[in-house]
Image: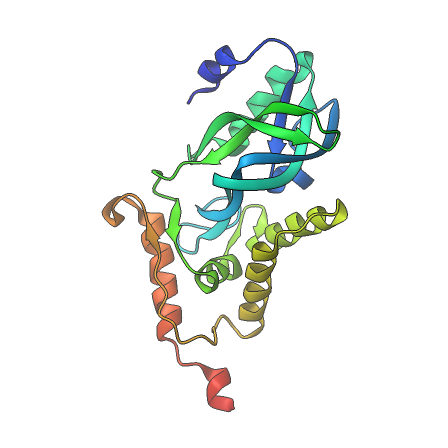
Length: 232
């Protein structure tokens, strides 16, 4: 969706924005107020191949998207009307360049108990960079290898978790992925599991060079001899 089309649908006045990843600790816009909030009907997931900010086309990383089902803690920002146009322009440049997200107004309950409708960037499961089926170890491999224009993917995950801890919330699955990625880095990228890894995405693989690159990385990792095991 183009920014002009989305803006035309917004109600007049201030707008709330819900951040569940890097927007929690690195917003790109001026805001009037921020508070902890919980989105209902959506959950945070590492499901988007990153070939720009946290990876490359040859070695993609993995970043977060908001997916259907469950709930998700994050930061809610209130942007007052005079700042809204500039804030939305910055958000579109940052989040919508590859059209991997769908901008939506979703229900968010603030820490005060008030419920608002906030702009959130929801993962598009039909996009070529959407990772549909990948186990924890497979996601950890992509996190461990990804380094892009904004630095290592591991730092992106760590900063998100650190911010969540600072405000008193946790994401145990994301913590496990980070720990597995750190272990892979320490072991030179070799996992200890004998499971064959696959990267199943939508739509067909013939139209997704980024997905093919991710799958190739995982297949190579699965074929490597496990030096750590040999030493034991």
